[in-house]
Length: 424
Ligand SMILES: Cc1cc2nc3c(=O)[nH]c(=O)nc-3n(C[C@H](O)[C@H](O)[C@H](O)COP(=O)(O)OP(=O)(O)OC[C@H]3O[C@@H](n4cnc5c(N)ncnc54)[C@H](O)[C@@H]3O)c2cc1C
Image 1 (cartoon, rainbow, N blue to C red):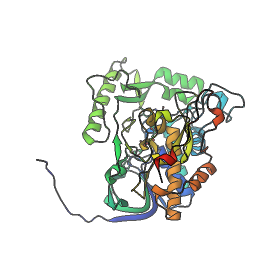
Image 2: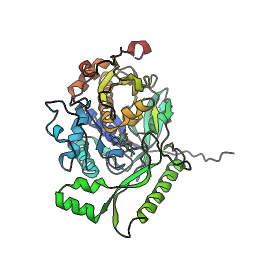
Image 3: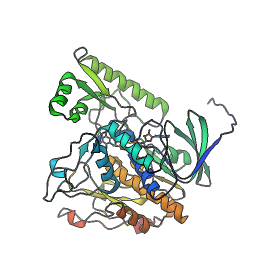
Image 4: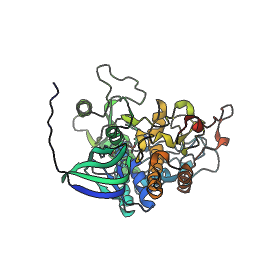
């Protein structure tokens, strides 16, 4: 028989906001910033103690390609602003062709860079704080209060204990769709391979930094627990796939990985290596996402969506272009909830295309602007008028639809499916 306790408690009210963003990864930071720039009163709740999520505490300090692989920029807007911010005060590994923006001549060099995770985190805090976003660190969103499909508030927990905060619109940028799941929004559970990579330093790598003056060499030497890539090649047979959304499963993943990393460290010549940084959050790629009104598919390459909020590119394959439909971020029947980042609706490899850092920032910016427009117009997020949102995204520097001239010869530009699926 299941054991449980019941108790009744009085939970103090914390405060009311126009918009609450849960999760301060790159998507949540973008959402909060976009909403605050629209003049909204915004609270950003983050369970760790710095911003950036996987991109900083998860040590994934690499902006994947934001171009088509032929020298044409596809992703700009707030994603490019964050890229520039991430390298403004620290090292970069931008290819020379991209050092001064989009190259004049075609190039195979991709628009990518590594960055210092800690400097990026501090720069995000400065930017959001100075824009008026209220940040609540070291605070977990533990539950939601729902009334007829509408979110009436979030329960949060921190050093002050448990409290309750309310907003007109809520953005779930937890990466794990924590709020949506608890709100009863249909979600899809993913599986995760055994990956846990940090950075180590040796006397030689320190010497290289001294010789070159380039700190990028400090964060270049990987140290591993599990090292399985996103395709799962060589996933050990005796290691389970992890959900990343249950306490025991997350702890088992962390303990196994930390012990393996320590074993690997002990194989090095004694005291020849130090650990510069190890992941402070689990390196799970696909934990849980919304089952949105629209789910992007891998074969949606070169498909225009009438509800696109931004054009994006495939981070591995040159030329492959996609759009992020607004319908991947919302679900009909949940009027004041929206998601962004790695919990938007994508199937298989399309989920990978949507979840990496630049597209996560695009959907974050779109969620922040959508929430602001929803508050202003009183229109529900699941039936928002899209033209003003697309105008605001374009004003924020994004291409809404990819340029057909960049579609390789022989590939068909696919017709919009928006009207067919009856979204909004
Ligand atoms: C191993 C690995 C390698 C990768 N490599 C790359 C790469 O090279 N380049 C690239 O572009 N992308 C890469 N990615 C993907 C990319 O890092 C992430 O998908 C992206 O950073 C997701 O951003 P996000 O803001 O959506 O989510 P997250 O970064 O997961 O942010 C979610 C935030 O919410 C907080 N949070 C979670 N739950 C709660 C809660 N209940 N209450 C309050 N706060 C909460 C978390 O602490 C976190 O800060 C990689 C991912 C992994 C795991």
